[in-house]
Amino acid sequence: MKFRSARPSDLGTVDALIVPVFSGSAGVPEVLPRALRAIVERVHRENGGRKLYFSTTHVGGERGLPTRTVAVFAGDRADWSVERARNVAAAGIKTLWRSTAKKVGVVLADDVIGYERAARATVEGVIYSTWRPEVHRTTATDKQLPPIASVTLVTGVKDDLKDAIRRGEAVGGAVNTARRLANEPANKMTPTILAEEARALAKDSGNVEIEVLDRERCKKLGMNSYLSVAQGSHEPPRFIVMRYRGRGGRGYDIAFVGKGITFDSGGISIKTNEGMQHMKADMTGAASVIAAIAAVARLGTKANVIAIAPCTENLPGGSATKPGDVFTSMSGRTVEVLNTDAEGRLVLIDGVTYAQREGAKRVVDVATLTGSIQIALGQHFSGLFGRPDGFVEEVRAAGADAGDRFWPMPLTDEYREEIRSDIADIVNSAGTGGGASKGAAFIDAVVDEGTEWAHLDIASTFWSEKDRPHSPKGPQGPAVRTLIELAERASRR
Image: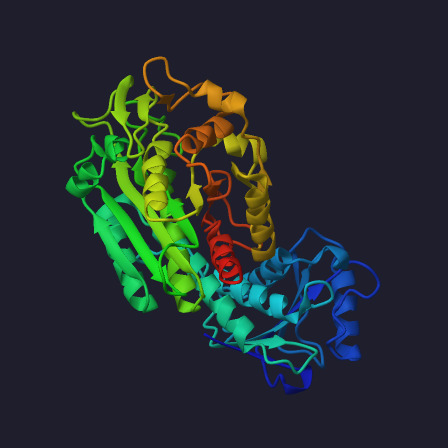
């Protein structure tokens, strides 16, 4: 699929045109000719006017319009954002599923966010909408994707948007990569296979070094907390380390650490069967950091970045960890395991410690960590924890700019006190109340003084049970955009 930008007069012939329509009297972007704006506004008004965000109306067939014109309701113009620009493009492309559209135009609205950001977001949205989860069907899907060969961004300026398009392609491709990895069933995405995928991405990016540590190497490094989760599975654990040096020199400007549980049964503290099939995607954090660092390298970002993905299965085998067992983590902290289904934090603390020993002074971990965060926030925001407050706010702002939504959550000494163990340093489960904050407090216990750290709990946003106007059901690829944005910000520090 090729992207380009053009003014309306240079648009040429397209099979379909996607137009954002805002509420109010002047709802259609002024970049379109007056006659075309009037037709779209009239048809949209006749078909219901103001609707839910991203609802669509087909307009095609009238003189002066392409064969298919898709009006997408975009809400109030004052609320226009990167996220809405991305979702409008995705919703418009989604209506073209099962069509024969090959050349598509998308009208940009720049009133609030500017053409550069609108172009990037639109390219991302188009790419997201071309991903479907039915990869293992042997018959044609009933939601066939259109054979789109080219997408033209319709703008009102002559500015060259090639850089914006290039970034949108890299970020959009990274999100879809994370979704693809998380969508694979556990028998087709073991820790070993995920390591092979990471190797392929590192090679394709052209400038990422990769090292995969096996059980024996991890044991020598003292990663007993991480290895405790792997004890019940016949699949060997794989601790994936990817390094990108965009500015050269020593140290890392930022580290990404992603939870890589390729299947989570809960271990001895076994889960109920309801929804357990989604636990194939409990490695979404790992998929996110692997995809993000590959995109950072493709973009040539002038920052040094390390991505760490501690990967294993969590199964109730004969040698599995038992509730009450105690292990010494890589940091030297002793851990009492009361609930083997609180395993994500056990792998993350060794991943965070490894990042710090590699010289990273800024660490962001990404994990489908707690059901508590979904109870607190639903499916529209991910939880954000960390310290100091300035870094937490920087991560939140980076997410807002990139199109991810994070909600800052409390992490105080009261939560740290609750994870103290009676027989060891810390305990991995301390009751359900405030569970997301207690999970963050557990990871915080190994964060060194002087390290800026943020924890992204994406258990609320990693999966959608239904098709949405702007996104297919299945894995959603959260946090990838934010990680790339943080690396780019680091390059400007």
